[in-house]
Length: 246
Image 1 (tube, rainbow, N blue to C red):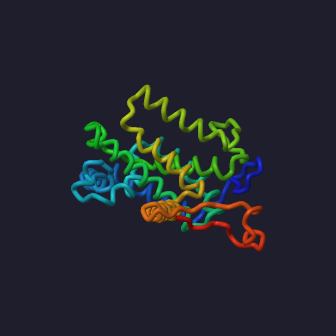
Image 2: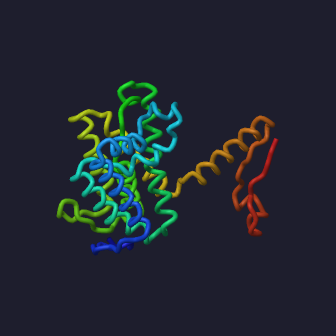
Image 3: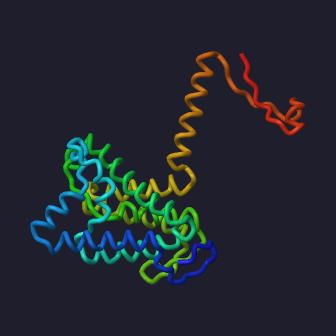
């Protein structure tokens, strides 16, 4: 898929980040399926169970994305990673793309764990598969390249529509087959919108610092007001018009 926003479709290259994520996902999934007891032990190490966080299994919000025990699901997961991920990696670079991939995975898992505090079914449910990360990629594609044309089951669709379509499909599965297994996907989609829209962790930390400074100023009975260019001669000279007032 072309990283440009024009309405076009092409076969993307296999980029470095996509290649290694795909190889790792394929290897872990196949080994877990064919190695018998050793495969079961491997699965137990990478599967994310919210209650496991209290037992020190803090790596599983990142590793559960590498395990997919359904052959058809694995095929579509790898295909989606290639078609969507390669375009985003070409746009962002490998480091940012891989970071985004794991951020969506971890955000989906941790938000699910938060829900698990209120639901024992969620708290004890085993989660695996890269669908939370894939939902994040879909959201990023829709936000950053809304006019790109992609094929949804051989039907050409503008990328902007993939966001409501993906959300609708996830909600439909939740309603018809049970909501517990699909929480990471839903939260991964939201994380993709959040992080792709320029509101990543660094931006959120900056906003938190601004809130804390504003709170301190209010406690000291200082506040920041913004003047207009007409009543502030400094602003006409190219300087800011913010002032601290009692």
